[in-house]
Amino acid sequence: MNITLPAIGIERKWRVASIGYLVFCVVYTIAGATPFREATVLNPSSIDNLIPLIPVTAWIYMAQFFFLLFSVMALKKTESVSRALYAMAAASALSFTVFFVYPTTITRDVVASEGLTGWLFEFLYRIDSSANCFPSLHVSLAWIAAAGVFEESRKKGFVAFFVAAVISLSTLTTKQHYFIDVIAGLALAALCLALLSKTDFKAQAPAHK
Image (cartoon, rainbow, N blue to C red; front, side):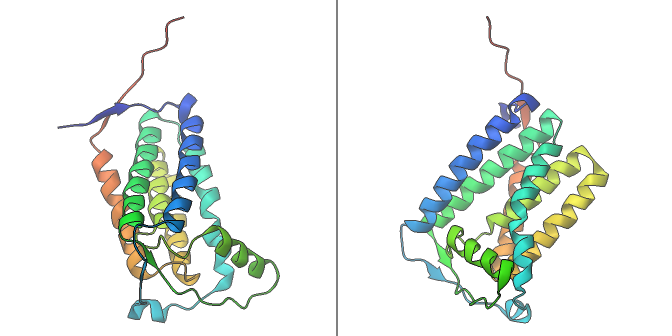
C-alpha cells in the first residue's frame, strides 16, 4: 500500500529545506554532546588501514554542504523535490536515533597541515563531533541529493553521483569516518529512497482568501 504525504512544491522547497537544516544542526549537535550512553570506539578495518590520511581532501569533505545546496537548487519537479527532502528527513531521523541510542566515535589523527588546509581541519574538528560516526550522514545525504538530481536529469544525475562518490571517499581520506560508516550511510540512503519510491505526494489545497 502506497503512503501519501503532502507535496513540497517549488514555492515551498527553500522554506522547508531551511527549517529542516536548522533542526538538523540543533539535533546533530545535541546528539553528539549528550548521548544516552558512552560512545563505543570503532576500530579501523583492514580497508581503513590501507587508506591514507590526505589532509587536502578536507576541502572535498566540506564541499558537501555546497553540493546539497546546489542539488536542492537543481530540483524543479514537485515529486523529485518532495522525495529528496522527505528521504533526507527520514535518513536524519533514523541516524539521530542511532546516535542517541548507540553512539560511536573514532580516534582522530593529528593533522600536521599548515596554511588554509590546516585551518580548515581545525574548523572541521570544532564543528563536527568525533561522535555520530555510524552511519555516515555525510554519505547518506550526498547520495540522496544525487538521486534527486538524477530523477530530474540523467546527464546531471551522473555528474551528481560522481560528486557523491568523491565526497564519500573524502570521509575516509580525512579519517572522519571508517569504511563501515560509509557502507551504512549508503545502505541508509538506499533504504530511505526505496521507502519513498512508491509514495504519493498530494498537493495542498490553496488557502481561501
